[in-house]
Amino acid sequence: MVVLAVTALTAVAATWSMAEGGVARASAGLATVSSVEDEGVDCPTSNPGTPSANPRLPDPFRRLDGSRISAKSDWRCHRAETKQLAQRYVYGDKPAKPQTVSGTVSNTSITVNVAHNGRTASFSASVQLPSGGSGPYPAVVVLGGFGADTATIRSAGAAVISYDPLAVGREGTPRTNKQGAFYSIYGSSSSSGLLVAWAWGVSRIIDVIEQSGGTILRADATGVTGCSRYGKGAFVTGAFDQRIALTMPIESGSAGSPIFRGIPGESGAQPLSSAYGEQPWLGDAFGSYTGNPANLPIDTHQTVAMVAPRGLLIMDNPHIDWLAARSSSVAALAGAEVYRALGAGDNISYWSDVQDGTHCAARSEWRTPLQQNIQKFLLNTGSSTGVFRISSRKSGSLSEWRDWQTPVLADGPTTPPTTPPTTTPPTTPPTTTPPTTPPTTTPPTTPPSTSPPASGACSASVSINQWTGGFVATVRVTAGAAPVNGWTVAVTLPSGASVTNAWNAQRSGSSGAVTFSNVSYNGSIAAGQSTEFGFQGTGTGGGMTPVCSAR
Image (cartoon, rainbow, N blue to C red; front, side, top):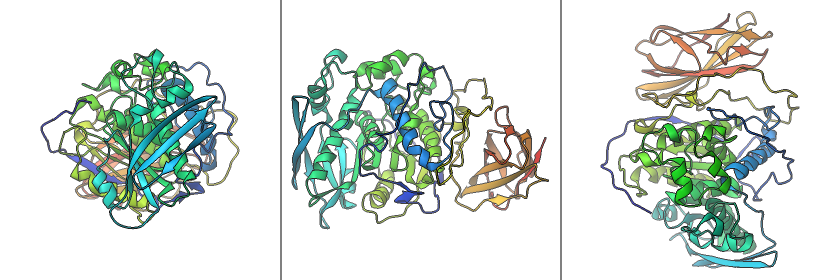
């Protein structure tokens, strides 16, 4: 691993809250941590068929049959479909729990012994308990010695499990002769990449903690972290094991959290072919897509979504181009839409606003959010909201990458539609130049202001995220009793306020009386249904009352 030093630069960042009414440990019946590795193991999944090219991010709410999920209860099996795509096209299969897993847990170490189909393998990890408090303790698995600051983890009240993933999936081997405990069980020619192997190892550690009786460590309060290549591993580990309460990848770069579709257009980012060829991190099947990621039926925003509604804190470094932090911010913004739809918007945070460019440094900016996330998701003693702080050096624009809207998911089960929506997506491919300020589709921190329906044609409501000197407004346009085939929303901005950026709408004016109208793909709204657009501005955004008219 190469450690790079970059001159520290001051980065200006936009900050906003992801609060969703104080959701912490559970949301609408969706527990933020599971007692099983994979809740969707019993869900039927179908063959995805031949994927078609799509330059934009795939709709994370769309099933393989073309319909969209409509209730929060649909997520369990839709996540299983997403996992199937992730394994088939990106990471390779992560096998279920082997026939036999045994081991020991002490104050200083964990041993793991695995047997499956006549093959055996063993590995171990070291344990450091917190200096204070009493057990059993929550624990954070740190991959490869590179991850979130272990002193902060222990001072927050969690143990540190130091796990050597190379003992489970060794680097420096050809794809046809992979080595380590995972490949001793499943064969050296397995098509599964190292990231899945490393994730499998963490799952077996949790198995042993579960069997230990819970006198030293708590199996229901496990986090995972890693930086650089081990950040890639932490990201995949948290996505594939629903027993992990808190996932914290750091500076993971290509093959980690950045969207695959964005990397080719991000200047200086590690090319996909390089990430695939440097080490067998990704599954063998991904080799067919290094030059054409638009053909993938999945992208990393859906891997982010696989973590939902559990805790996720993504930490990035905008000073090193190789790490593709802009593409990572897009993955986080898009994945946050799934969190928001599930009513768990305050369970995801993204932070790239750091001044020190040193790779895998213990940063002062991350100390407080790290402590808050451990308290909230591992100790169950905190209620902090999720925060997005995206450096202006690497700010991605979600509006450039999606042609889908976030649905309002019902709390109870509903009957899925028999045919997919007919809204025509845009045909213009996304640009690679980011806006000067980061747009966001994050949830509101103030109650929405709603205009009354205009003769049943359409209505509009606005939610404001305000910070010192600026704000983001999210406007929801809702059709009345009849469909709408084009809409315009008029807004009068407060004195001194000015619009600087807008997405999913065409804008006329920047201060005073401003109008927004639909773009090609969101003008048609079925009766009773909604679409959203947003804008960012300077000054104060409170007190606006949007008025909608249908065209």
